[in-house]
Amino acid sequence: MEIKNVKTYSTVSAVLECGGKVLLLRRPEDAHSFPGKWSLVSGRVEPGENPAEAARREIEEETGIKVGFPDASQTHFYVREGDVVWNVHPFLYKVSSDKVELNSENTDFVWVDRGKVSCDGLVDGVERIVKNF
Image 1: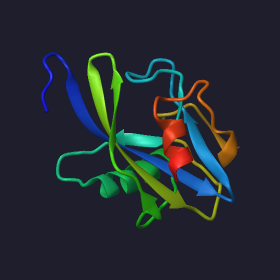
Image 2 (image 1 turned 90 degrees about the vertical axis):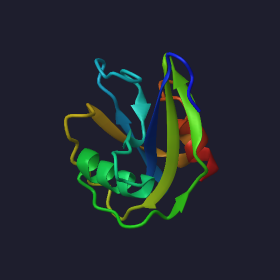
Image 3 (image 1 turned 135 degrees about the vertical axis):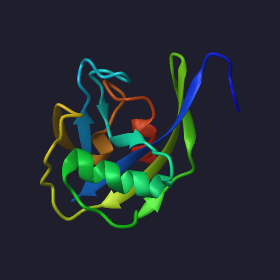
Image 4 (image 1 turned 30 degrees about the vertical axis):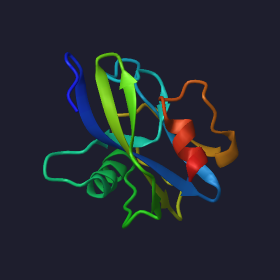
């Protein structure tokens, strides 16, 4: 669907879970979308990629963690941010190590108990994704 003066992008949002904790990444204050907020591993689906391929690529780029197929997925949903609509494809990956090597796309990370992921300071939709896995 096309909406005048609104851009739509397909994106992935991946829950990385290790020992009952979920990885949250801090977006830079000067990020183009959701500046300064905490997010899951996220990024756009590139041309020629399917969402699962994009999730694997983003996880390795942003955290240095290599993953295979997702442990679970959810139905995509939409999040609006000003004149942008994000078509979000959520995935769950259970990982065995909590070692993270951040790239320059995020400024910090934290592993949070899955039940303590709450709305304050989160990118829209993060709490919903975690709760539904």
